Image 1: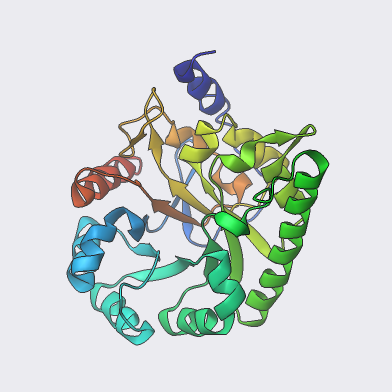
Image 2: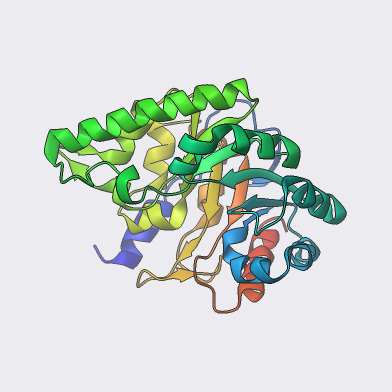
Amino acid sequence: MDRRRFVQHSLGAGLLLAGAGRAVPAAARTLTGARTLPDAWGLQLYTVRSLMARDVERTLASVARIGYGEVEFAGYFGRSPVEIRTALEAEGLTAPAAHLSLEELRSGFDEAAAAAAEIGHRYLVVPYLGGSERPGNDGATGSALVDGYRRLADEFNGLGARCREAGLMFGYHNHDFELEEVDGLRLLDVMIENTDPELVTYEVDFYWLVHGGADPFDYFSRYSGRFELCHVKDRTEDGEMADVGAGVIDFAAIFGRSEEAGLIHYFVEHDQPGDPMGSVRASFEHLDALDA
């Protein structure tokens, strides 16, 4: 099956009302066709990191003018938590989530939790496993690698318990390496199945999920309610990242299953946009049209 047919097969099936009987997330509205969309679209600020590095306040103002209501941080660009909160309040933005490395949480959890309380984050999300953080960096394969991911899940549960004590939720963001199958087990599944849903949620990145050969609907069905956050990131037929609406991922179909997935916060992201602000504007305009 070629990539276009795979994407269409994975994302084009089933626009049934999902999760009947479950509560619709508070920050959502249900539209014609059983689509559940957020009250405010969010932006992962990694997309505009070059602009944030030059002028945090001006960049946040531009993001708000486009129409975004939420942002997700990936670093604070030399600003204090108080300065970040002030900049957000000036533009009417909220920041429900922030990305921090696993090592940052291991060594500086209290500082991260204090910053989150000041800024108003509700989620602390590990966005990637690099170097020694990733199971298998020691050459482990097979059952030893799977056991490494089980131990990682245990650590996530511990961080989740600390987050809960601080009034926060711990999350993990997928790429495609977690979709490797080892001894018949997909590593992402090992992580999800060995973490407590009361302590750990997942931020599903749709580009990486599809790029890794997985079906979002399959994950929504098997792990209903486990995905409170998402990255709305599009993919071209040949596998490149694209502005939302310029690729082949059918987000209208995905959002038709938002309730089943558990989605509450939706963050647009593009890792390498040629024109960062133009990219976030184009993506917002496409998503805003879904409300028409």
